[in-house]
Amino acid sequence: MGYKDLKFPDNSLFLVTGGAGFIGTNLCEAILNLGYRVRCLDDLSTGKQENVDLLINDENYEFIKGDIKDFDTCLKACEGVDYVLNQAAWGSVPRSIEMPLFYCANNIQGTLNMLEAARQNNVKKFVYASSSSVYGDEPNLPKKEGREGNLLSPYALTKRCDEEWAKQYTKHYGLDTYGLRYFNVFGRRQSPDGAYAAVIPKFIKLLLKGETPTINGDGRQSRDFTYIENVIEANLKACAAPHEAAGEAFNIAYGGREYLIDIYNGLTEALGVDIQPNFGPDRPGDIKHSNADISKAKELLGYDPEWSFERGIRAAIDWYRENLA
Image: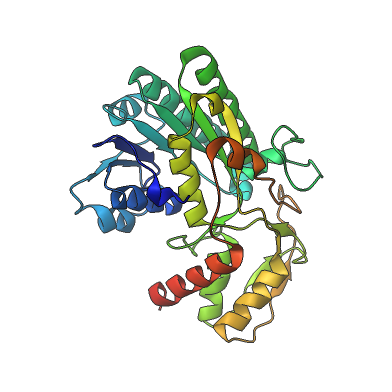
């Protein structure tokens, strides 16, 4: 069953933090399409005003410009909320190495602020974004919950801390928390711009412009690229998950394994261009190979991703062709 068949109590209110970002906007839109109310909290530091403007005319959508580092803002945002989908965080492994203090304040203290605000407002479910980066240097594939290695970046550390704090809130305060370890999410509205942009939109934009992308490393690194629709499903199924599954973290992926050079070659073919990439140095803190065992999410959340990489990449290419033209 996909997420479109899920039922929540009438007039349910979902708070999406980071709701003007790539994943957050897609979540807001999906919840509105299901007929429920959405409150978006975003400070627009990495989220975009245009994503807010896309939804602002829906009577069930409310936007609060605010920062999760401010506890009073978090308290206000959680008033009357049934479900929190906490996506607010700064991503990027390399940037976290450059800005460790900010990542601690934003990704750890900000998430803790949201957990406490949700507890004080008697929120039913608290679903939050974690990351496959928590596996660190653990060499075995596929990646499986409970088998983590040494962390390789401040970003990974922030996500591991978030999981531990969430576990405490379930154990001591009875707040049902569900951590979603995202594996390389891609799809519509993911920004191709900036030094820390994700690889798929960056490649597509450069190739559409006839420019030469750079691949960090030799291109033989592999990832479990996961289309945005699967992530929406995971978030909403976590909101409907039983108490018994609370306090846990779950791999959210398709369960595949794609090599970067193969993706690049597939994109050039799909876009009808013949451009050889540049190869640059490996990025510090990056994991060489990553793919997910998703059996725990299937069993405890009912997660059953419908979008394969191939289906998702076709949809993404179509979206960027239309919106980057």
